Length: 404
Image (cartoon, rainbow, N blue to C red; front, side):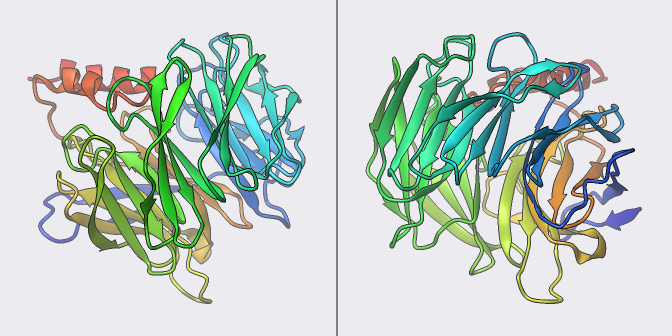
C-alpha cells in the first residue's frame, strides 16, 4: 500500500493501492518492450479489459471485476505499433484494430466471443502510418477509422458500413509528418473533428473540421514551438469546450491550449509536468466535476525518479495540485490511461511499464464528493464529443440516486 497526500490547499488526502498484475500461466515479461495498449470490455461482463500489443503478439487481459487480469491466448501480430478497440461490426462486442507501421497495413481483428479475437483482415495503408483512432466520424452509429500517414502527409479515413468492410475511404491532406492524432468535437456541433500534430520545424497543430456528410475542412495551422510527446483533449476550463493538454518532453512541462471557440486556441500557462513527460490521459479522477490529468514521467537520465504524475484540476485549468505515483523498481512508464477497473465508480490509473510485467493498475480510493441535483444531467451533457460508456452512465446515476 502506498499513500499520497494532496499538496497546497487541497483538503482531501489521496489514497491508492498499487497492484502487481501477473497473468496466471503466462509471463508477459520479455526482452522487447510493450508497444501499446487500449481498454475495452472485450467479454461483455461490464468491466474493462486490457488489449496489449507486445513481442509480436496481441493479447487480451480479461478483468475479473476486481482489477485482476487473466491473459487469453495471444494471436500473432507482426510489427504492431498501435492498437485501438471498439465495436466495428455492430455485434455489441469490441473488436481490435492494429496498426503495422513498418508494413504500412491496418488489421481488423473481430471479437469471436469470450474476449478472444481473430487473426484479422488486412487493409493496405502505406505512407508510413503513425497514429490511429476509432471514431464515428459520420454519425451513422458505427465506428470509422482514421489513420495519420507521415510520409504521405495526410489522414486516411475509412468509413464503416456496419459490417467491418469499409467500402468508402478518403484522404485529407494535412502537411508533412503528422505523428499524433486526437479526435474531439472541438466546436461542439455533434461531429467529431480531428486534431493532428506535426513534428516539422516549426512543429504545428492542424485541425480538420468535420462538416458532416464525410467532408472535412482544414483549418489554418498553429505553430507550437515544441513537438508534443503526448496529448489529450478534454474540457479543462469548465466552459464545455475541449481544450488541449500537450506534454513537452524536452522542457519537462505541460502546455494547455485553451479552446476559445471558432477553432481558435490560446496558449495558457506552462505547467511543470515532472520529469520526461510522455503519455497523457484526461478524466475526472477525484469526481469533483472537472477533468484531471495523469502524465507518464519517463526521464532518460539514469537514476532519475520515474512514475505517473497526477494533476488535480482546480476547476478552471489555471492551476493543479500534483501527486507523483512512483513506479515499482523505478521502471519506465510507457503509457497511461484512466478508467474504473474494479467497479467502484472511481477512475483508476492503468500504466504500461517497460521490460517488466507490463500492466499495472493504481486503484483509486478517493471518496467522491456529493453529486448536485443537476449532476446527472451535467454528466449527460458533458463531453458531447465522446461516446458515453454505459459504465460511466451507470456510475453517474448511482451517485445521483444515493444523494440524501
